[in-house]
Length: 358
Length: 274
Image 1 (tube, chains in turn green, blue):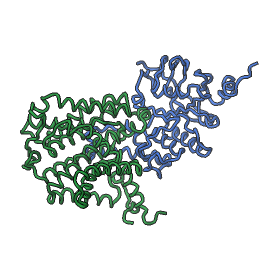
Image 2 (cartoon, each protein chain N blue to C red):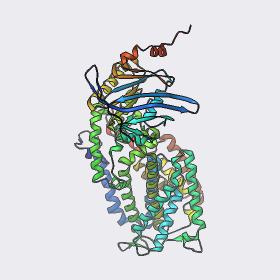
Image 3 (cartoon, each protein chain N blue to C red):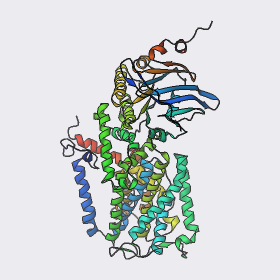
Image 4 (cartoon, chains in turn yellow, blue):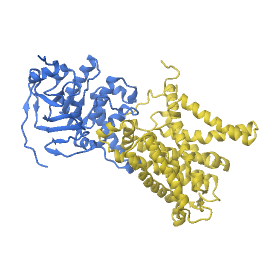
């Protein structure tokens, strides 16, 4: 009844093109922003930051990146883990080589470096598509992990082969290193996630986004209309990798603090992020967040439920948890193959007419 | 690159002024391996004209259209456009020169709304860079809204206002064809290629589509080249007709001339072998 478009007239194309054309949506969005920026940083504790919110935000950025490539651009990639590793190692090298430069700049530069690497590995997409491209990007995954393992320069010749994030500050607050407070970790990830989501939304609603979607939906027609497939595909790879690189840099420097490439950025990461966008919804900004939330929150919730509430032994709960998560993924994909974003869109469509659907 | 000699046009029976030659195809030969799909065909398309290409199935009409739109590169022959010889070009480069087309089997972007599909047609009119698009406020948004205004004119023109925000995948066939025409028109082409715009339509939809084609030609002055199997439509709409059969050109002229051409009648009705 409250949720409707009727009576909410748009008198300019600018108004018609806004992200949340329905008033209630807009209010909801502002409310979430107020809570995320104004309330959570003051009440957050270590458990919530490290178990839920920080990984959620970081994976949401990675999912946004992969969604740009796969959901909007139609190019399947299994190299996400490898590209995250590029971001992580790039930010590590930059942090240690230029300790006086702000970490924010380092993270952005790490994204830029990853964008370049992603573009290189995106070159095969000009010739091959679908499953074959997935296999080609899989090569990127294995090659990059191997490279960071084998070349000691990347981990500054440390004996353990690990990379460790030294302490860096933003505006006087430590955001990396062991002394970082929960709210500082949360805030830097939130800022990146907020700005990047906004950028993703802008890119996907404009000319570039239409080029990507045109290539995704029908590449031959797109080319005849005037889309240059070379620039469209490579820009999708570059921008996607930029996002994924930033996610990798944050994951290493803010969240993990120390990382070993095979463990932190293995093929599992690639699949995890791919699951996120499939469950969340391909080609949807909201879907990237929903998918990340689903994959990050569900195990935590189940663990709390099984171990905390029902008092099961931890090892049994850990196994059951895997099975339940797997079953739920299958269940969701059968019920709504287009992901949570579609489910949400359908709900909204129904809500617009509720309670008089005829 | 040399300038073709400008020739004057002619005036049609209904008093429309037809301009000089816009596209000139000279001795086009297209082979797929050993198969000659098009054999030494020459014809021209004049500015402001509605030019039909007809012929039985497999005559090479669609291949001809694909040569014009730059999707196929002929082994022999020359394509002259706006007075310049066109080298081998990528399809998107041809599109930038002002050639737009629709497809025999609808080739819309199913995952996008009608509005987005038509906006995609205006890609070549939009030039804001990645950075300004990422920031959106300012030049990118201004450009978007300006182009939206142009697109809305086309939406009005083709009477598809009510489905503007519908995903294309949900539309019925006839409307999809219309959206495809809208997408091609959005590029403000000088030469519009229509590959069987009326295939699979009922009489009413055909009438609508014919009206739109005539209106486009009339209001925007767009030159149109179309392939169509419905002879009634072709004869009514077009100013001049090229007839193809087995990759050869067997007739070229006004609808009346073509209708009375013996070779054309033979190709369509068959010849008695005695």
